[in-house]
Each structure stands twice: as structure tokens, then as C-alpha cells.
Length: 148
Image (cartoon, rainbow, N blue to C red):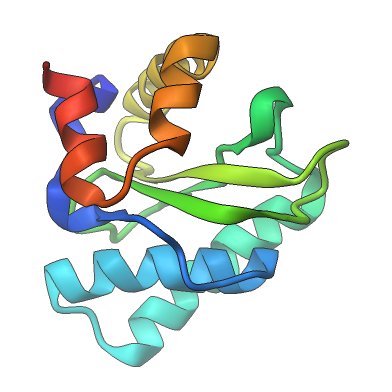
């Protein structure tokens, strides 16, 4: 499973309104919750698990990118939420983070989780693509970058 196979315009937020790491996670999980009709308690449980995973070690990378992620036994559908912040967010890396790829995957197929992370890492390695993501004005712009 690749990033392109999971990409959904409803799961992209540009610009993010949150300015703090845990709030970014809440905001991105909120996209998933709205898309799949999760309750507030289900949404909070997902966000808590992602935050607990992040507390083990930051997923912030170079180029101002972070890939917070977690696996769940009862996830409705593997998904990647993308958020782009106008200002750098402290997220545990050496530099502020502006691009977030939040990966939620099922425990049933761990290899899909790894494939998603690998697919995102490839995208994140392109300086040009990162600059294009940062210049995106809205979710449509981000979505088009992946499919044009």
C-alpha cells in the first residue's frame, strides 16, 4: 500500500490551525474522525495512542517534516492525513516542523504500515516536492501535487 493509494482530499488540511505538536495530532485525527464518523471518545483514543508513540521518540525528520504514526486493532481504514503549517511547530526535531503526515494503520497487516511509511519517506526526500508542499494554499493544491 502506497501513499497514493490512501490519499484522500478530505484528509488534507492546509493551513493547519494548531501551533503545538499535540494539537496538530488532535487536528489531523479530527479529519479522520469526521471522515469516518468516529465518536469523540474514539477520536481521543486514537490521538492518545499517536501521542504515546510520539513520546517514545519523535518522528520529526529533516526538511521540517514529521511522520507521526500508530497501528490499531480496530481502525476502520488505513489512512494518511497531511497537514501543512504556515509557521514551524516544535515537534521534537532539530528544526521546526511544517509538514505532517499522520499515518493510521491496522494491526492486521503490519507490512502495509511499513509500505506507507516508506512511500512517505520517498516523497519527503525530494527538496523540490517539499518546497511545493510548503507553497500549497489549500488541500486541492496538495492533492494535485501528488496526481499531476
